[in-house]
Length: 566
Image (tube, rainbow, N blue to C red; front, side):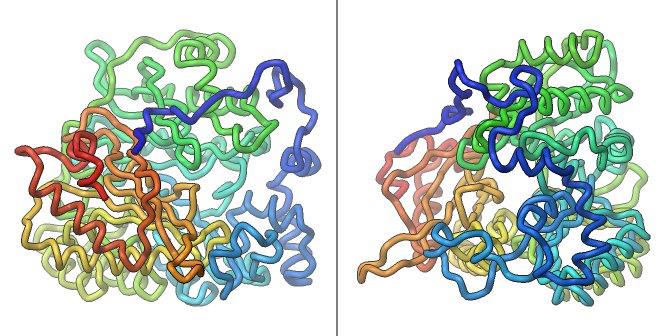
């Protein structure tokens, strides 16, 4: 078994060769991805979609637009049905692609008004075969979208203030925000004005639409640290400065995938009125100095691994801000439940109600019914969370029970079992071209089985189970108590079967964990989808039997004998 420290697999590129840093090496493209971006800004594809492709159909879309620039508007081709995981790495993008799209609706801060919720849901029913999954980036993801319908979907979304602009691609992606921003009684500060300033000012700006890779952002003012700040390219995390008041602690350079690295504190205090300006400075550092020669070395975490926080701060201040930022205190989690599942009192005396779907799976029909329940409860808005959950805001206390009953009818609950609450799953082989295994149904069934089997233990400690269909870690396997990475294994008869590589003991900072850490990989252990619930039950029962008082699962994993983890 091996333990993966923060960023052990992240290494900067070799010296003595061009790394494609614009301010060091110039802007000549060094690979096909950089070439198609240089040839035409990804944002320009919208005009072709509206003027040509929606009229002439899927076959009229050239490859650089189909598998490249359309991502700038939240569109990926989805996986052709019936292609098993054993062929994922063997077929080309064209061979894997169906003539339908996944469309990602960016919901910065996870916000949805009742009108927006109705619109998102109705689009799902009419154009997406009733698909509308909640992602762990606070987005809604549709499937089965036809190119002919894209302009009308955009029209409807934009008529209520929503967009798909830069929801994918080498761009500033959705800004994660605390889903209880502006309402939580224990909030340090409300990040909503900063999120809106960033989105309104910079999303869709052509000067920021050709980055080395994706750029993920997160902002919270809540003391539960509810935006997984350690795994974003930039995070602004609420703190109280002893002299300057409420503001943000700046973190940079996080990311998972195949080379996981946790973000680092830059050590500065960012006043709320300077947050957007600092964000703009950091993203321009990435644009100008990020490595573009190799895409697998192009995330901001690789630059930070070479520079370190001190140099990064100096460049930010000297070259991009023109002033020094004050030193600041570190963000600390002081309250539990960053998923906000349950019923809580708002600062105005009303309630917010956190509901758990099953691994983020939802539908347009369910969201339409939810909108009716939300309205009946006297609320006018919901928010999605970075944990594949949703929260209904502004509920009068007298209406809470009625909302809870209506939500249960929709298979949404404020009182989920341990594993239903703490299990996440990516899209998986059902629609994703990169996946090797099925995830959503597998994780849903496993969570139900485990809640039934382990109810006798009465565990009062969260155990996160994250299920991913490939090595890219969209479901954050390295920061889960139990992370499962999908792969193809050989069955006893020599055929292919779904299996998972196991990561144990990862986690992000929380009220019961001071420091984040990446999970331990159990080398040589592959658990089939069929055997996965048995494996998890076995390990959890050992934990329950061997744990010290109040010991977390991850703490036990890191001291347990390897045999106990198999």
